[in-house]
Length: 315
Image 1 (tube, rainbow, N blue to C red):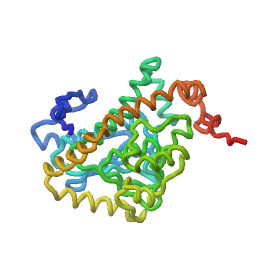
Image 2 (image 1 turned 90 degrees about the vertical axis):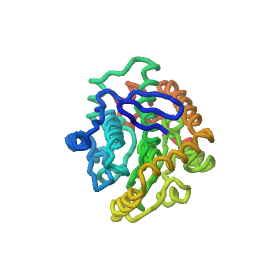
Image 3 (image 1 turned 135 degrees about the vertical axis):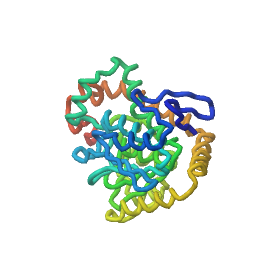
Image 4 (image 1 turned 90 degrees about the horizontal axis):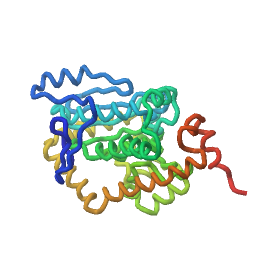
């Protein structure tokens, strides 16, 4: 179970990983750190602390909270700051507007401009590194945060949206929430952080992957992905009430309870399965480039036009 100490994340296997560049070091003074936290502003996130509960809200409702590079890096920073803040005991992850998240940003003007300003390492090696760091490694890190995390989900929670929700410890969903991994429909195998077999079981996972069908909140609750389904107008209230209740527990006990559950999954092969699934995902990239649904040229097209070749009905 990783934990943060200064600028380094350690785990029981003595693995050491540097934190992202520019990550501030927590000071020993709670007052100075609290000032640093409140002075931090983000371009794609809103943060609000209610007692021991920190709520992080992705704030791109105009693009259904699509996950740009900037959003993911800011989210990583917010999570890691929350770990260092002793006043924060529970973290809520929410999305502004009608939808939690429609997934990765495939072409907003902001994302396309950012891609031109921050060119990627060329070739397949560069693509592998980008996808590993931006969509897999960070989500794995968020799954192992040493504090309880709750996803507050409404509307679309699909593709990359379902990834980050699945990485949270608990999911509270509104009645109108919809989940989906539509990668097969778009020529891929699944998303980069592929925990669906553990969340739904193998047979239902295959059904949802093969069809690309949306999964209702009620179906997700029955399968075990979602903890509770509540009316839309009660979502924020119910999520906060649960977070405040959990925050009453001892932080060290919560940390070790979470570690035991995650390490049980790891002992069952969860981590190896996740890494293997990512490699299978990467094997679809050359195929998708050949079809014209992936890569720089494909990104110049609107998503609907990009995937048109895959959505033709057979005679």
